[in-house]
Amino acid sequence: MLTGYILLAQKIFPALFLAAAFFYFFKKNKEMARYVFLIYGMIVFRFIYAGILTKMQYDLWLDNDFTRYLLPPHQPIRYFIGYAWTHFWLGAVISIGAPLIVFLFFVVLRKIKKEALGGEEAGIIFLTSLVAGWPNIIIFLPLAFIFALLTAVSRKIFLKDDHISVSLPFLLAALIIILFGDYLFDHINMPELKI
Image (cartoon, rainbow, N blue to C red):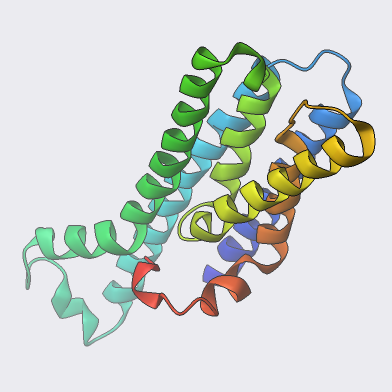
């Protein structure tokens, strides 16, 4: 049963990514509102997924003769709540909070320099950061900024264009994180960040 839920989650992240890419590349009128549904869906999914994992953990402990003693009435409920918070809910909260901070950074940047960021780019940034989640956002953000820098330099050299678009670099970084994020994170030697 646990495997089915995990596989479902692994299918939802790429589906949201592909929907964002579709909206970006095939729609003429690119507005932030197009991403709002996907963003809310991703946030709700993070919390539902944490809830499902919490319920599954409780049931797993309840069915085992040894771990049953970690639940009420043998232990206070706060033990299980603390366990669920650190193993399931904290990751969901950080997976939403970190992209929100990134989004707010770009909103402030847009206020300072109006032409710096379009409305659709803010949506792409927030959505792709949500898809990356915690702890993969640690790899995702530097990767996205490196791609954005390479894109800007290439446009300046080959097209003589000063416009910097971050949408494609963030989508590319999100695709790499979807495909290889866990593998890359396992190789940066920071296992204590994995919640």
